[in-house]
Length: 568
Image (tube, rainbow, N blue to C red; front, side, top):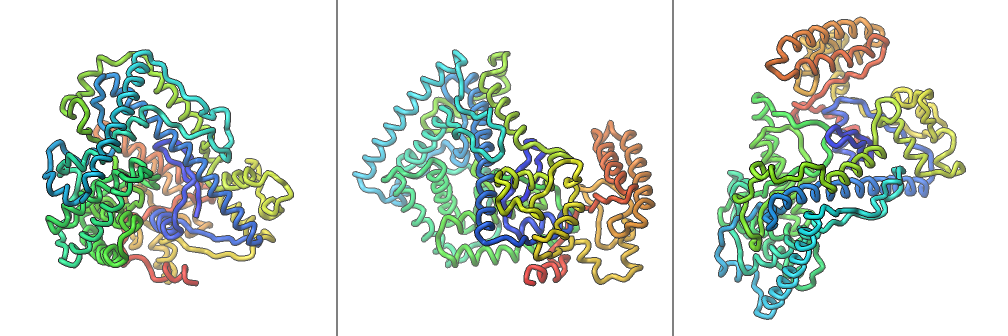
């Protein structure tokens, strides 16, 4: 499914694509919001077209974001090259390997290549060396002259539904690609030991049957990487991923322990990671034990595939973050980003000191920095957010207008098309929901109550009243994601202004205390107090935007009706 979410990190209004189950948990449980599902009375062909249009819009934005990442990485490499003319620059993905040699005989038997295959591999390394040298000469010249330019960035295109002219490809990026491909091939001749702190080892011991399975998987990975060597049709990250998985399995087999390479988060996150309180860690640990059994069964019984490997690594990475940082949110898009050096680079990491060499930097803004900034502003202008003019409600219908510019299209019929003018108030979810409910094109409505509302379903009036008051609530617990408040006002429209006034005074008091302690907490409580005041103001005029968050719940806390709703 698709939905829109603004990120304060990159200031981009993201088109988020994810499974319904994940969206429902994050939105309906952690963020505690009701979800109302409206099914439109449109033909199957129109449904497929609508799905294709959203796929296209998502890919357009992804291409812009990919371009931004390329420019960001290029800017970093450019700055490093200014300080290190001999290209002693760390490369993403190589930080899992040390400079210490591993036993070449062992690896020769693992790769199991004949003399002809080894000779062909040497020739390919020589070709890569020539290409790398040519790019380095070109880059040195460009850094010295500061002559960098990128054509066809598509900055004149402000339409969120039109592709950028081209995917950005820089010499820096090509240099990294060649270096990664060279490293993987060189490894067959000159293997390296892993960097211990780039991997995480779990305490669970693998069974003999599981070790035998890992041996089979390792052979599959070896065959795949040899195919890459022979046919030369794999990209650099594909080859490096295969090699990292091979060394991971080799180490797991030797130690009889589960090992996972440490990855970096590579996806949009709803909320900042927060530490799980000590009182909850025991329950979460029990949940991970259950999940371990499920994931182990799937990984070891389903057989080898790149998808099963990815799922297994994602689970282990989330588990690792729970064990090491006790964070509460789980993700499914992690990447190998540990930085390291190749065997043919002139110096090692200890010889590159970025802070000490800062005096060598050109004081003026580099051309790469300027281009990166310009393109970033361009992307932000396309995917901008505004509480009223461009929010996650009315922006959906703006996209619909872009997707179907022909007014005679079925998706533009009355009841499906929504006015995006501010005076239509279609930026308010409740108003849009009311219009959708009365639309002749709506044939089916299904409500998924929020986590708190599901828990309140079977409570009597007295119990519900207690749940509205934070100090007496058994369902809700204060947490780092919410500013302090006294009452949930969602439950009663009549009493909402009175409760809102109490919340307003409480927030004002919290803000006042925050001002006093701001020298000690760097204004954290001031910020929380302002947020509490902001959430309380709409309650004075019968509106409710405060729902509360529930990041600290366990499997046992979720009522059975939560799962039953998906089966109805």
